[in-house]
Length: 352
Image (cartoon, rainbow, N blue to C red; front, top):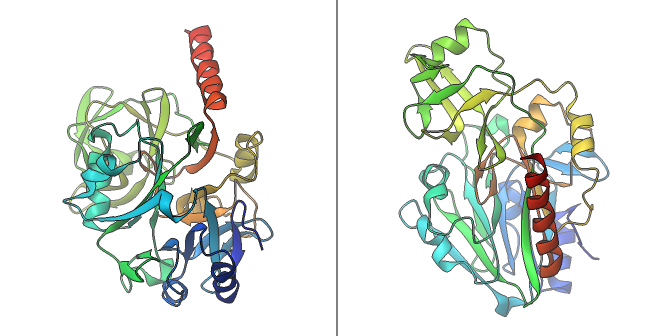
């Protein structure tokens, strides 16, 4: 059985696949009780109960795995590193000269916070392709169990450490990391924050200082819509996690950054149609993709086919931490990547 781009599979089915093709490299998502029963092998994994599948569309399950086959040249071409909040900054130091890093981080952990807030400042972060996701739990289990990451080589699991697989690629090949964002900025107002962080109290609305929690409440803002800022030409979402009226504080699923100008997103009338339009030109056989569990929930995607197959996650990683976004990556010929980059620059110049 081949797993070219990812598929839903049973525990027994993936055990058989590991025995049949032990030298391949896999990333596995599923419930903790399934991942903990897997034999040691060339895989890394993370917990989630939410999937986007080819056959059933959006699926909430505790009884199936989702397996994606990561491109590699065999076991000698990759290495696994484990990081905590004090060492995660080394990730770019360990990245291959030509290749990619696949990163899994448990949600709500200190290493999750550290990476989310500091990754944009890591040395050479945007030179080394990093892709992956933030692991989660079934929403019924929030507060009862913790998100986990698994090192299949050793059989170890962690709820307080991140796992990274650094993969070398052969000469002439390159990793290409992409995001699909179905949200666009609204017309305003401009929102700016006083410091980087996952929580805020004060902000500036069109230059006027105010309390952000009170402003959201007073204006009856739909908190299912993310804030969006322009990060070097790319629209990046920051989703609202909670409004604490007593503390006058707002918590986010990803950090906001001082110096960035945010705006609320426009409403998306139909998530399925929006993802269908946004992914129309993307091949279905990319090695990896994931989507945000917030899109899954807010877009009512259970049973619907939206975007590419993959886990629905508590955060997405495309170099830095993202949320309410779909992320995918592929391995392409270097010449093809250079042509795409040239066309992108030409397009920007045409609109300048």
